Every structure is written in C-alpha cells, then in structure tokens.
Length: 256
Image (cartoon, rainbow, N blue to C red):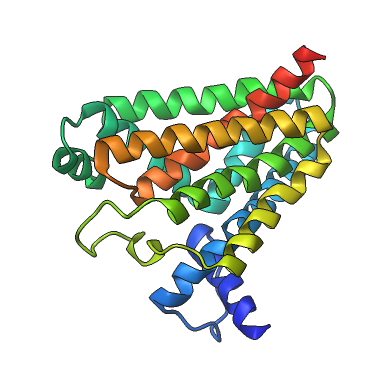
C-alpha cells in the first residue's frame, strides 16, 4: 500500500504543481510505474475545474466562468499538456522528417503552428463547454469530470502501445517510456473509465468512441511521422481527447 501511495504522489508531482511529501522517494522506475495513476490525476484536475466553474457561475456569466475554470486547471497542471499540444503542432506542422520534427518540438520557442493550434484548441474548449453549460452547472461538472480522466487514459494508451521516438535520454518524458504491467494497465483503465458513469449512456458511449478514435488516429500519425511518441505527443493526445470528449457529449445531445 505504501508503494502505491508513493506512485500516486509521484504522478501528482510530475503531472501537476502539487508539492510531493519529502518522504516520497524518486526514481525513474517509480516514475514509469506511476503512469497507472495518470487518469487519476485527471480526477483531481477535473474536480478542481468543476468546482471552479460552479463557484464562478454563481456570480458570472457561463462564458466567463468556463474561461476561469479552464485557467484554474491550466494553473494546476502548469500548462503541461497545453505546452505539449503547441510543440506537437509546431513539430508536425513545420517538420519534414523525424530529425527536424524532434528538433522543433525540443525548441522552447513557440512558432506559428503552435500559436494557432493552441489558440484554436482553447477557443474550441471554451465554445464546447459554454454550449454544455446551457444544461446547467451539473452538466459542465460531469463533462469536466469525465473528460480529464478519459483523455489521460488515451495518452496512457499511446504510452503503453508505442515505442519512444527519441534516441537520447535528454527528454523529461524519457523515464516514462515503458509499457505498464497488467495490474498497472488495469488501474489506469478503471480510473479512466469510471467517471463515464456521470454521463448518460449515450454520452458515455460517444465519449468513449471519440477518445478511442483520437487514440488510434494519433498512434497512426505518430508511427508514420516519428516511429513512436514523445512527451509532447502524449500531451497533444490528452488535449485532443479532452476536446473530443466535450464534442462527443454535445453530439449525443443533438442526436437525441
């Protein structure tokens, strides 16, 4: 039990801005094993965003409340995944071969592809959540609580199935580049899928299908362009799957 708690704290320390207790040891092996709790980190991020929205919506219009809730989640994670999305847009958009793509993604500066991609991603999230807000704060909370764990499960699936694309050990994501064992994979799946119970059956099925489609499409793209994944591409997968979940929920409403 203590070992699992150490892995949980390691996951929160790596994927969020939460401080890790001093008694938690660090090692690359623990970091790799902590990926099983990547979707569980999504529980915390989604809960924080949902609470932030509920409080802001008491005094502010839905659009403003959504923006502030997203800002709160970004602050909590240190824009970890948004940065990966922007870097992936720059690399895949501006690079011609594997070496060039990897070099662009490693550059700390953001380019035109990254800027446009990040702006459009944030605008799309805000627009989708504002539409969901028409059904009330509970609907927004359910969407956030489902999207964050499920999207992190999509990224975990990429990590588990694809090889790591960089040959050097300089990347911060390099220690994570190991497949999960069966118990770890089971934990990730349960943590990622459990919050779907907050949605209607049709919404849950649509969200699951959308995230599966994102994962498959991302995996094919990453293999074709790079022969594997990087940490930035995991962040990009999370962002794409999160947006796909919101859009799937909206599509389920329109279908009914």
